Length: 220
Image (cartoon, rainbow, N blue to C red; front, side, top):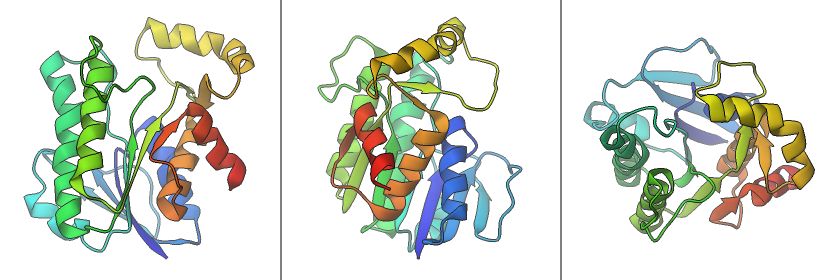
């Protein structure tokens, strides 16, 4: 029976992963660090309001005795200034990882990264460069296991207002994208479930590209 720590559980993918964990007989407790209380209520769920994701000093007790963490905090490219984009994509991960490593050194860490993440940290694309920085940090912190999820296009199963034209266009093209196979797209439900399954049961791969994520679902 696992204790799973979440952040970003109110987002599109994080919500699906949270739901799966709450329904799993292999999960005892779910702790969700949030900006504000959500609409999900469950006997297993403890929501903790955190004012500053750069400072967990007042919340370290919630990082103790954690078996796995699922980190899904993120922001769309060009949605915020570059400095803030880097903080959310890199610094938030580092601060969270440091707190978890201190309190639960044997925990497994599952990160929602992205296709094209560049571990050389030299890409001209901020998304790729910053995701690579976050991945590199996690791989060197010393967790017992790290799993870096690099989905391609994520199809939102639940209707939503798309963040920009590119996402609106991609959603319209989704039926065509599926024809290119399991390396090109995945639904939000599939991705959330794969992350949850990995947090609960583990997997033998560190870097999980889109096709690897589909394989996790096939093996469940």
